[in-house]
Image (cartoon, rainbow, N blue to C red):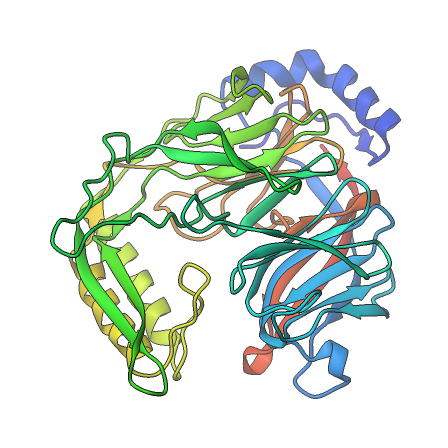
Amino acid sequence: MQSLLRPTCTVSLSCASLQFFTVLFVEGSQVPGARAVDLELAATTEGLYTVGTFSGQDWETFGRVTDVDFDASGNLYILDEGNYRVVVLDRAGELVRMIGSQGEGPGEFSRPTSAAILGDGRLVVYDTGFPAMKVFDPAGDFVSGTIVNPLQKMPGALLLPIGTGRLVTTGGMKFRGSSRDVPEDPPVDDHLRDIDIFSLDGSGMEVLYRAWGLPREAFTAEINQTDALGRKDLTLRRSRLRAFGPPLHLGVLPDGRVAVVDSVGYRVKLIGLNGGVTGVIEREIAPEPVTEAIQEAERARMIEGLTGSTGSRIPPVFGMMLDGEAAEEYREQTRAMIEDMVFAEEIPVVAGMAVDGGGRFWIARRPRGGTGDGPIDLMTPEGDYIGTLPPDGPRIPDAFGPDGLMAYIETGELDVPGVRVIRLVSLER
């Protein structure tokens, strides 16, 4: 909704100008933010470079891009899982170096799925095939590897650094032992979702906070994948699908606190390093009820996306690749599960959340009906409402960098993976 206030000040990306903006509009912006009246922002962006080609130099031909990160100088680190390497580019998009190769030795990757840049400039790559956290210095040389114990808990796909030796993660698999005849009973708090801190000093993981969730649905399907000799090397048990379940989004503030979205409503909880909730950011925006028309549209959208993933392979499932008969079985099972999936009563308000380098919150809201792009709210590190980007404005990037740099993992023509980098120049009310 267009605001009746029409200030003409430009929000610069510098800290001084951001403080000026916050002070100038603190009285006028707090009330509309609380009342869910959007104050529209117009973003000025500058396209910098796009990399990724079907035929070109080796470094710019990607197999499968799974993560991107910026360092403090604005260099972009592209994790190319398909080619078992990290490609480092400068601000102009020119090659700086390539890190890693296929293998299981020091500095080599067997299934790299996520990465992060620590506060001291070191690169951490999570290799699920080993599994281990592999650390490289700013020059790209291998420094150390920290083993991940799969019987304890494994990190998820998202790694967010806190300081120079710890990472926040969630969503990873947990292996539970049980006898063949007596399966292990799930814990009574199975609906809670752990947000963990992983330490590179070898001490493993500890639970920082247990996010809210719904009880898991019962297992309804099983997929077995065999190796070249016909031996079963992977068993995947699948639970009943659920649409519009409560989200789980994370971000890390400059002071080390972790921002968590785990609610159906518009609510961002701030978690201190002791695991306690230190604050909550909210807006009075109610969830949308799920109607039969919304259910039909969501089923059609999911089936269309499933049909589009043709070929002998499908995208990674829990960091594992399925191909051949297992991939086809996965598609057939998924189609049947989509037709039988469970729907929540309401569509969660928040579709995504991230924290940029200046500590500002980017909170994406779902549009009416739950599909497509919705508006994005910007909040100061203190939780004051700045304004809202329209659905056709810049989206939350896959990585924020210094000086307004933002990187997006994209797929071009002929399904060629690539990365697009832009710079956010200014925001205007």
